[in-house]
Length: 592
Image (cartoon, rainbow, N blue to C red; front, side, top):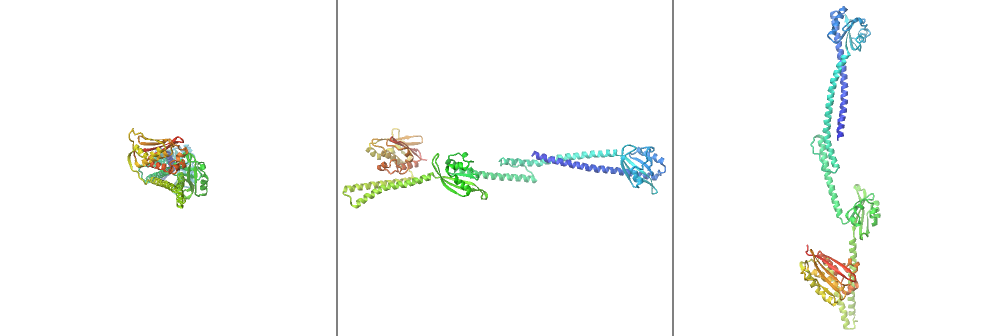
């Protein structure tokens, strides 16, 4: 801004100097010419006056008297007077001795009036007598219409030059003052102009540095005021627009960050331009290793880089599934489509990744469930049908065999009933169609009551049940009394079923700060490590033959897991094959 102020002031100074010099030369030339013209007129007037005096006084006949009379002019005035005869002879002179003066017929001013008969003769030249530059004016002297001589007046040019110099000095002083005032005025004017412009520039710089609160607070009128108003309006509009962009960007980032699906934006050059947290989780890579990288580097391991290339080059949509095996196996549903800018100009491709691992697992579980249900139903139904057909055919040899067949039909029907009952109950629990009746219950009492129904089977196998120690007092928890009893009964029944004869089962209750821990440990056959993760799945059996022989439906642990989770609890299992298993249930003391 300082440079602009200097430019304006400097430009105005140069223009002022040029104008003053032009004006100075123009005025000085006019004054010089005017002064010379006035001096010449003055000389002519004096010459004419002398001519009249000569004519009226008859001095043209008495040359001696004329010379004497002319010599007195030098005492009163600065002009020089010379009277010259018709032949060029000097008759009289106010400053010089006429005896020493040459014939003046060849002088330019004399030649003009005596020889060429002009009314006025002028000349500026070096005087032969005084050896100085002088201005001469001559006019003819007439008598009876005839030229009888000439009168010449003259003045030194030095006096003219001195007068003009004095005028020039005064004029120069006046013009210098004008120049000085002009420069000061230009400086003030340029400062007043650049000051508001400087404020505008400062505001625009702050806007450039993303300070959108910058405003011009000065009050100006005219065009500067309009400029300030426009800049403030522009700043306000820009601030509002930036706020909208920032809000939209925050919304977009919030949406992308909270999406469970991965979103990836690839530009038209094949580099990843945008991604979200879900993509990081799927690919097990940080954003820094995804954003700015080529799509072949990022998605090459998934085997979908050729699909991305097809979308970018052919402007089509593609859909496929991709598998990831590290750090855990995932199945991703991949949708790839081109994305466009304004004017429908293609800018690259957008990739959406859906984790369908759970869906595929559920589909597999559903398929296995249908197969398991079919298998579980087929065996008893086949037995019932076969023995019923045998009885109906009359091929039973005796009543004892018939009763045996009927007992088998009854047992298989009971098994079918238990299976259907467990399926219906599990379905209700999963759908939360059986709301919990939460009350404060004594855990030790629930365990004692629940194990009474299973104690006979434990005695038949000579299995010792170690109950919780009641000496520490009752342990209370908020739970559904019947459901908690069902949890304990299922766990203890499983322990009895899978513990060999003469084994032991330990039931323990531990009260902690905010939860109660119930554990059931047996000395049975144990569970292989590879089966632990699937142990709570429906119809999953570690030993299918033994389980079926024990009369189990394969749904007990699945029911237990859902009942524990409905109480906001957790269930864990630890097992060593051939040593035994421990099932641990953690329940919060209070239900939220």
